[in-house]
Length: 247
Image 1 (spheres, rainbow, N blue to C red):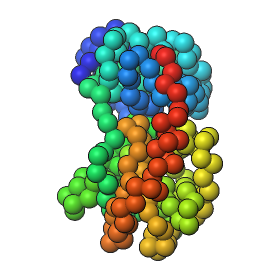
Image 2: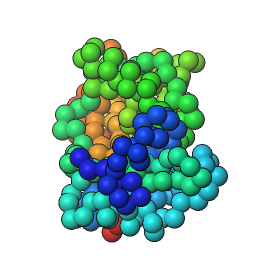
Image 3: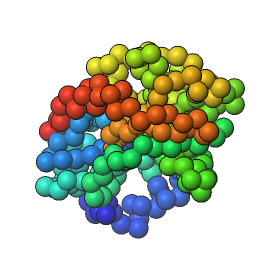
Image 4: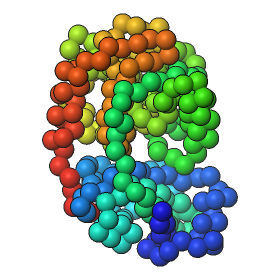
């Protein structure tokens, strides 16, 4: 793992603020051959959240330069975080080995939890980690976040979509609209509808999306979904059609 802060190797001093002050935001992406799928959407996310949290803009050209500098020629998983230890935001780039989407269908454990300020990919992830570990201990891959009124919102680290009668449905609830979800939105134009836990047996299947890609869902709690690769075909085709942007 390599960490750079504003283009320089991280030090104890530059890491002190994000270690002690849990306030900031980030985006996560996969880099292949110097390119990122949906890079402009990532840059827009970073700028919008910086404006909302810190009241200032974030230069996308500078962010691209910082990513290029940290990644070099490597394929990698990259996390770009923004904090403000003083008067101006600083950009932290974390470079780790490349990741891929899960190769097996995923299982989700419903838990009652709503992320604060859910539309921002913020660094406060205690609840997601806590319930994610509970899900793993119960034999599931991930937690499914359900609001106190029973509405399904999102996975702990994913967005979740459903299949019904040949249609794709996103839950209509407060959530983080992930980059992969946004990219699929532009191509597939899925429906949005309120999805409650009690509705889960009525769907034909489900899938999850995040920066690693897309994976089908085989089980949510006690509800099992059949393996139907044909339902996933248009989702994979849409995702594959998204161009990789040069950093």
